[in-house]
Length: 429
Image 1 (tube, rainbow, N blue to C red):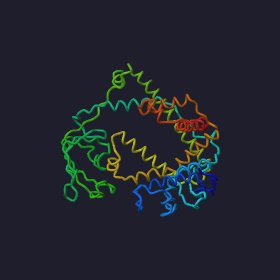
Image 2 (tube, rainbow, N blue to C red):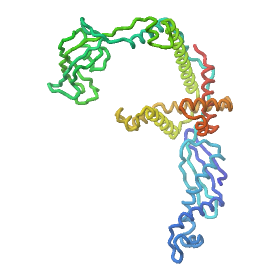
Image 3 (cartoon, one colour):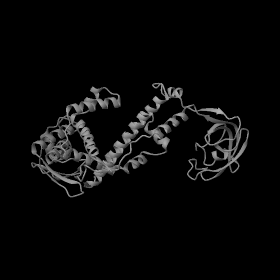
Image 4 (tube, rainbow, N blue to C red):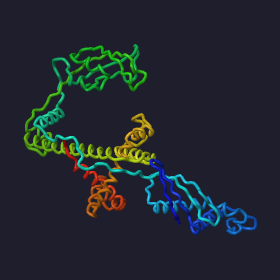
């Protein structure tokens, strides 16, 4: 169909693919185009849709079918030329006609954005920052105390003033320039002092006061306050403290341990379980940090041709779809997300565009490593990947396997193996 495909490309530019479409293919396209237009033709002496091809050519000329014929045969002809030229397009081509002469092959030129070339630098035995995975007794104690605070109960503070960490039950009435405003009043509101949930300065002015006190709280709304009519303005809150509650921490003993974790019988067992969990978390965090630094250094060491805009746009689109898909699984559809965050799709796309250059370069780098190392994928590795995906997405394994062909699985597994190669060869210093 396509023959004599010629590919040329200047550095950091889209390439040009020139190819021909042979006469046999053109005739097939013309036949297809004629069948399409004949249905609506009205030619004197012939029933609608029955005009012969020869008559059509005499009346309208064969050239009247050229554009429809080209539309019909171009996709396959272009795909054949791409395969012949052995290029990897990353976006839609811009097509122009070089020549469409009667009884001659048609010549087509396509300006094509293609995957840029990558020249690998050092990607093995890279020096990375040494990671500390030690878990100390203080780390375990800090985690115990965090759990202890989670189990704390609020008890009424009979005597004494409110302190940071206490919860006060208050009535408050706010005014700005002597006028009440929406959301500025509440009764029997529970506020934890030090939680920084109220306007800056509000909670601090209640510290040191006792139950029954009436406090005049004076604050200034932040300049970037969400309610623009209040931003930067001074406000007065007439506040009455009804109750003060303080946190009562449970005793760190075997009973506490069993309350926190039903699988342990003693505080010592809980400590050991915390030790093991923290150790696993530290090792995973260290592994992730080494991987991130090593892969980024490999990217920085490589040389890339200019990244086509089409690749950046595709990356951003994928990031947006993945992000909104995660929101959807949490019950938040895109419209709700944009309303909640007061943003637009353009804002979200801009957010992801900032890192698109590096993400695309990382992907290109890893694919280049797969080729350079001649990384292969086994049938067992494909089966394991399908099983993992099925578990992650809670899908049937057969459904996952049917949705993914070997080339897709090989690509993703190959990328993971390239990452492991870079990471495992890295040297911590």
